[in-house]
Amino acid sequence: MRVVTLTTNGIATGPEDEMAQGMADETLLGRAATLEDVGYASVFAASDGARSVTAATINISGGALVDR
Image (tube, rainbow, N blue to C red):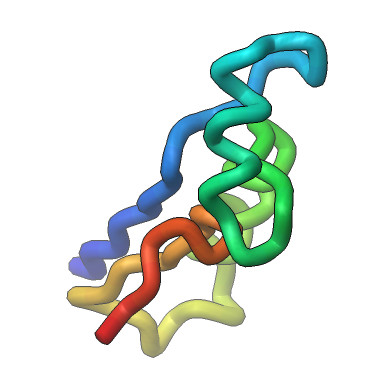
């Protein structure tokens, strides 16, 4: 069994959303994660390409959450 966690700083649902802009301002990339970003990361985590990944967190926060 593998355990992989996906973490975001929130999901932007629309560019006109004031909250989405606030999330984007907190990131190193200048944009918040989208549902598409979460989908891509999920597909990777479930794929054979990640078969050695376990007890890990995939950080898709755009740099808002920095591992130390």
